Image 1 (tube, rainbow, N blue to C red):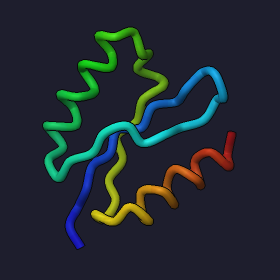
Image 2 (image 1 turned 180 degrees about the vertical axis):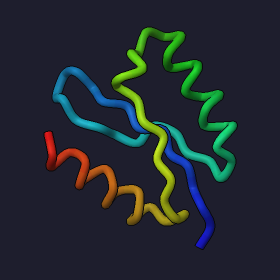
Image 3 (image 1 turned 180 degrees about the horizontal axis):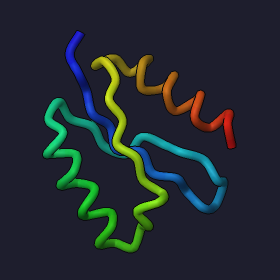
Length: 69
């Protein structure tokens, strides 16, 4: 399995995290994060996670994060 980086955004409307963008290169995800910050998303409402490259791994991470809210 390859490392995969995913940008998560916490949405104020429902106070939950969702995966918004992903790539095998962390620098690409950081670039995308910059666009979100430029659009007004607060840094505290963002995370870059690293999982394997399966959708199940990403979904599991996000679901577990949302259970803590």
